[in-house]
Length: 340
Ligand SMILES: Cc1cc2nc3c(=O)[nH]c(=O)nc-3n(C[C@H](O)[C@H](O)[C@H](O)COP(=O)(O)OP(=O)(O)OC[C@H]3O[C@@H](n4cnc5c(N)ncnc54)[C@H](O)[C@@H]3O)c2cc1C
Image 1 (cartoon, rainbow, N blue to C red):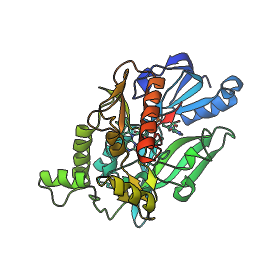
Image 2: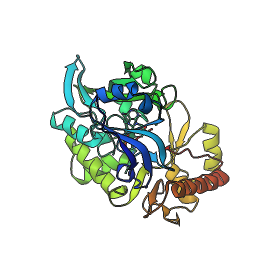
Image 3: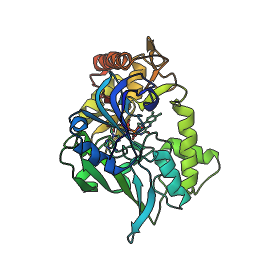
Image 4: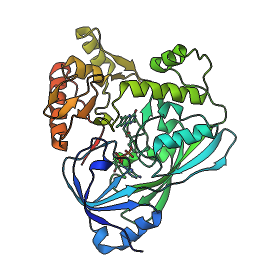
């Protein structure tokens, strides 16, 4: 099989920060067979690999000296059902938001709170994407992946993915080793709305909706996100740049004593999640910039490329924020995007 590999390829259009970086080699993967062909090509197989989806959770701090595998496979199908759920499978290269809209169009609820998250279906399990009280794992059924070391294709169920807060097995045991080919979701037959997030409840109330449909929740989430988050097409960003830190009840109580307005959320296991955006805001960073790397005016958790910033500029800004938050609150912020 001949592979349409391109060399010295600019990744600028393919990362939502809009950062200029070149891939030594680049392949737009339109069939899973191409991955097997890469494995059989001695020269390509010897290169370091980076799997790329929508580039919305990446910080490119340098040119990539290997092969970028840009997943562009397509296909969405209802593949089965059981007593409780309808199973829908989507190829890795499908756009996440368009996939969510497809499920709603098919009359299937369950993914509506995750509307408008940028990126691809294939990347969605990597950090167990989440928003507005719902995480991918809530409706995840199984995935198929290709092991780039062994050339084998394998299936993982939910337990095997070890999903956690913005975390999965793909950030640990399978890191840099697996290409997710497709993901199957189990969408509930007895759908229940999830409006536990105040923003969503308020948006629906403002529209006079008391018993929302999945589509109405999706529309509410889209409206909220459009107001709050910068559109990468207008200003480069990767959404939330830091995870919300998890602290013990003792740490949270000590912080609350010093900062009565501390924003924190109790977790089921007795720990507390702190609002990283609040910590950054209180450290005086909201709206500030270092050169072309900035902190978004409306949401301190979002770092932005104000035009011409390099990945290193963004990384330096992130490090300065981490240092200030650590000095003030004794909490180390952990970045959410993958640094390349
Ligand atoms: C404006 C904005 C808002 C956002 N809001 C949210 C939010 O609410 N919740 C949330 O969780 N995230 C959010 N994000 C982050 C991002 O959208 C998600 O993490 C998304 O799943 C990343 O998908 P992607 O295809 O762009 O991945 P990429 O950025 O292309 O890749 C991210 C990581 O996944 C790996 N990867 C990608 N595809 C595959 C594959 N097929 N197989 C194996 N590895 C793969 C890459 O190698 C990389 O390590 C937001 C981002 C932006 C820009």
